[in-house]
Length: 159
Image (cartoon, rainbow, N blue to C red; front, side):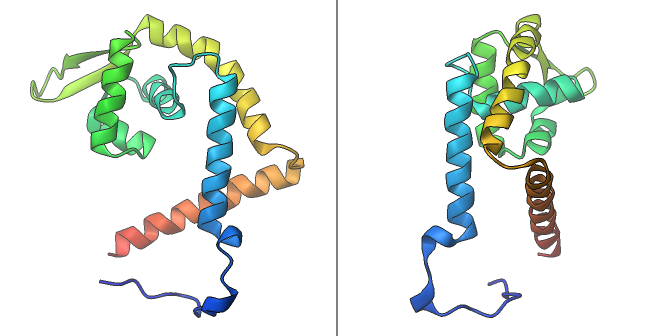
């Protein structure tokens, strides 16, 4: 089923892809990823692996399904992330006490130590990602991005 557009369609001739929200979000995401990789201080750690470690720190031992929800990463991708983090001894896996088929992921001391080293850098990375935005613009962009995400979730709930 094709979603209906809440706005009128602009003319094709006046369409400049470089001014479209998707293109701009992708470029901003690429910029953030480059800043993250340059300043994180661990050339094996990706931004989404960092998010996964933070989710485990914040939520405690979690199933893969819970990590999918906490990180907004799909099931197949989270499996690969877990595998790579486990190979670095940053997490450990154990069967759930109540359901032996379910695997629980937990931070190791090495994972906690890595977070202790990286989180101060993450603050710097966020600052650099925001670039020359003034304090009001910083609040506004975070607010607007959350609003966009929330409206996307509302749309998927209606389907």
